[in-house]
Amino acid sequence: MPEGTVLAFDYGTKRVGVAVGEPSLGTAHALPGIAASGEQLMATLDALVAEWKPAKLVVGVPVDTAGAAHEMTRRAERFARQLEARFRLPVARVDERYTSAEAESRLREAAGARRAAKASRERALDSLAARVILEQYLAEAA
Image (cartoon, rainbow, N blue to C red):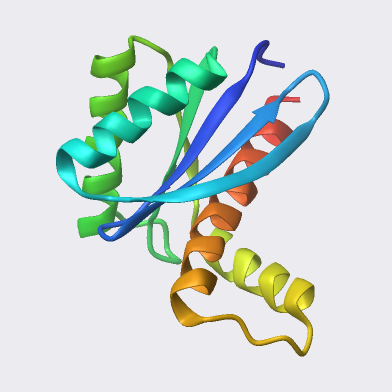
């Protein structure tokens, strides 16, 4: 089991979902998602790392249902390498094949009959996906 706080990311071209967890407690919590735009993204990541002081980072790597790489796989891998270079922290990769579907299911369950605004729902979905990625990482590391 890894020690210290872990930050997890669900990388997307428009938004990046974020979650934080404590492996020793087995907990993961979604944080507000962030816009995935160049220097704005990096400045926000700098602030997150400074605030949470993680021992490790986790990035969800999307593959198709057969496990094959595609364009978003390459983009997520590039994002993971950027994190490694910028923060000098270990970055674990997690197969996020079904995390969006799981996050969507959880969001529908939590919302019940309530209808949220589309943009707000998408931001929540991104960070909930990051939480699912982190929970998967913590379960595999246990």
